[in-house]
View 1 (cartoon, rainbow, N blue to C red):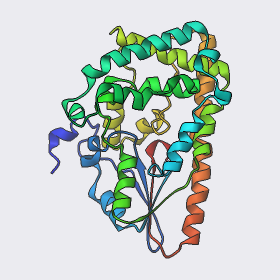
View 2 (spheres, rainbow, N blue to C red):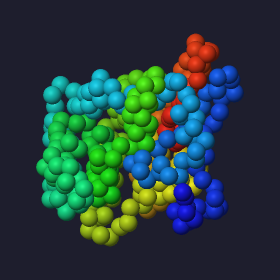
View 3 (cartoon, rainbow, N blue to C red):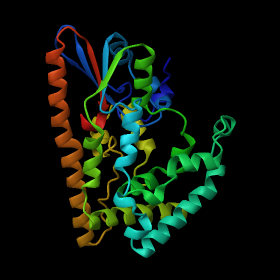
Length: 309
């Protein structure tokens, strides 16, 4: 049951998430917009027709196959600095020092942030820190920037609950459906590695500044996972798109920046839009079409990030 209070906060009462499109063919194919947050936060808001479509489909396809160990190890290696370099070798000394201080702070806070449930599951703080940030000194700065972005109390407290796309993948496997992916790891990873060095330094510095002021208590996060969840649950697609959710890429456009930094922020933003939204949409669209053409007798459920749609 879904009580009124649960959806209080939607612009229009009763407008619930409707990120399901039907591709007219026999048997039907569905396109469903997912979101990269703990599934427990959105599951009750996903309408029954979307769940029914998922159950009814014989093949379920994702952007990436997150249940495949090769995918996971491919993502990991794509995030590494080349030639065995260390972050310390590539970052300006002061930026590296701030990064290290911030991560030391996170490590200190983790035990206080964790939920009793996480402790009960044996996810003690050192293990959790290593699972998330272990080996950070060997990662490319752009991935360290994304990592810093996800090291917040809210994100830590939800570790251990699968995000919606992963949950659907696990469910599909459990139900013995055919699963697959329309993207390769390199296609998801290379665009992020394609930013130039000064853009990456700008992004990492901005991210650190933001998290340092969060730490000092002088700033509330500009847009949070909470906002994103609310927009998704309310079926507010525009808000989801503009928050760049799927790629988990932060938005650096910030009116308080000096003009030359505004330009850099703008460049990074359009680069990400181009690479992570437009080009990917086109590529994924082509692959969806050929899957449908090659398997005319099969019902499909495509679960892609709603921000891409």
